Length: 116
Image 1: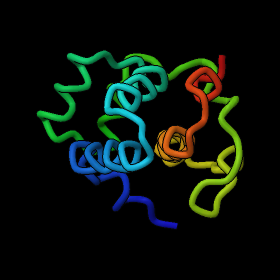
Image 2: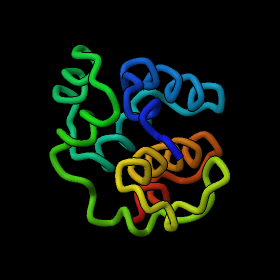
Image 3: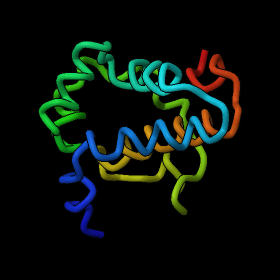
C-alpha cells in the first residue's frame, strides 16, 4: 500500500478535524492537546509551531520530541487494521494518533487513554 498521500497531509489540516470529532462528543480541544502531548512529547508551544509551519505528518512525527514509551500499549483496530500489526513505523504512529482521538471521542476516561 502506498502511504505517501497520508504522510504528505498537513497536520494543520487534520488537527481541527480531531478537535471537531472530540467536541461533537462533548470532549475539549484541551483534551485533544493532552492526548497529542502524551503521544509525541510536544508541548503547547512546539505543537503550535508545527501547525503554523503546516508540517506534514512525516515531519510532525520525525520532529516529535519523544514518542511516549507506552505506545506499545495502544492496541486494537483502527481503519480496518490491527495497530500492532502495522509494519510501517510512520503509519503505525499516525494510527496511534487516530486510535487515541477515537477513544477520546467515545468517552473513554483520560487515564485509560493515556495508558496509566
